[in-house]
Amino acid sequence: MPVKNRFAELLPEITAWRRDLHEHPEILFETHRTSAVVAEKLKQFGCDEIVTGIGRTGVVGVINGKTNTSGKVIGLRADMDALPIHEQTGLEYKSKTDGAMHACGHDGHTAMLLGAAKYLSETRNFDGKVVVIFQPAEEGGGGGREMCEDGMMDRWGIQEVYGMHNWPGRPIGSFAIRTGAFFAATDQFDITIEGKGGHAAKPHETVDSTLVAAHVVTALQSIVSRNADPVDQIVVSVTSIESSSKAFNVIAQRVHLKGTVRTMSKEMRALAETRLAAIAEGTAAAFGARADVTYHKGYPVMVNSEEQTEFAADVAKSVSGDCEEAPLVMGGEDFAYMLEERPGAYILVGNGDTASVHHPEYNFSDEAIPAGCSWWAEIVEKRMPAA
Ligand SMILES: [Zn+2]
Ligand SMILES: [Zn+2]
Image (tube, rainbow, N blue to C red):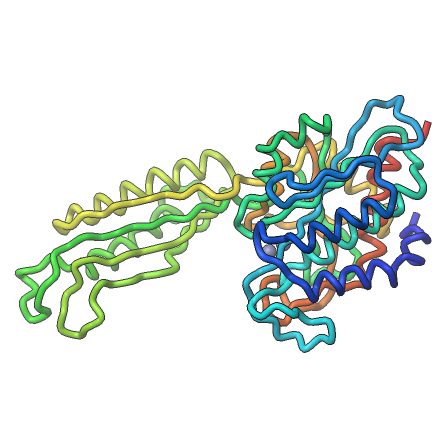
């Protein structure tokens, strides 16, 4: 079965919603206007329950099927937040907020889930209950985690959850998914190397924190090359080096390193944390300096459940004719917290040959809307078939 005809009819309307959201991007938990727009539309559609303020600015809507003998409850989740990027698309509906932009397509995700909610409210051709979840702060703020911490899963008895992200470089409306670990755990680290500053012409009277930092940066690469099993995935990147000296003739007292670690399993994550501290502290000590290491845990590994992933892939095939196996992604995804609480699946939908996400020229492709909406609707209608 191809895309649902109803979504072809609704395409102009859903596109208009998407472009309105695009014009009004809001960052992290500041999705006040977006949340209000979402709640208002859910009300217009005739959703049975609408609750705002879950996970600060998150919105939850409930749609009951014609019957509910199955007792099944499925959660469908979209993200609503934008990025602190200055938009350079030149679109007529470009961001009206300087320094904020929908550069990850969350405007499209929100519009597609709203489209599915409208259709499901109209038709209710399923036996069970749908919970539509609109989360703030996917881009590093942990809005999904906060919605879970507010007790969302238990409050609405959600049994499975599904998520979707657009994917530049894939044909528009085509799908890709994988079972198991899919998106990486995203951690950050700070290392402060404390030496002894002094005159650059008298290095023997100093402990050169710059030299120590250089050795630490190099040695950290041995976590990937010598500590990690070569068949596992891990990224260790030092992304910032800041010295307390700005002068050519002053040896710095202190150097601050920052970076990120990406892993695909709990074991690799623990290994990276332990080795990072040991290498930084041990290397600094060898030179008579000190390293203070802080390891900040970000989003966990996002793991797709086997049964729900197979089902989601079958639905994608029925909508688009095919569903490919997606490659591993070393980026992070806040939906990981929802998948830690409930089984479910996260799928990629092609955005065509556009700029990549987080690029100032990126734009969500409205032509993907019918496929995305159809996938949402069929997840519901096939998982909870009408009695
Ligand atoms: Zn993003
Ligand atoms: Zn995103």
